[in-house]
Image (tube, rainbow, N blue to C red; front, side, top):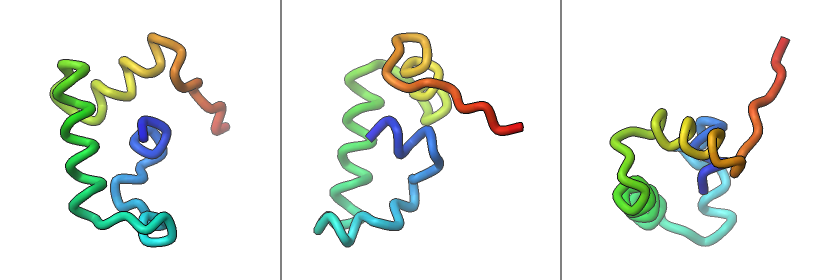
Length: 60
């Protein structure tokens, strides 16, 4: 889920392929933010990068 957030997947183009409703995706996202005590998707990305959950990409 954090990878999708980092990749701007808040629209989740493949959530239907995974048989998830838009509401389910939003609920999981909100719960992740709450559990990690971060206030925004941006803070979640920073948290994930600082803890090694995701790696920054080199888009040059």
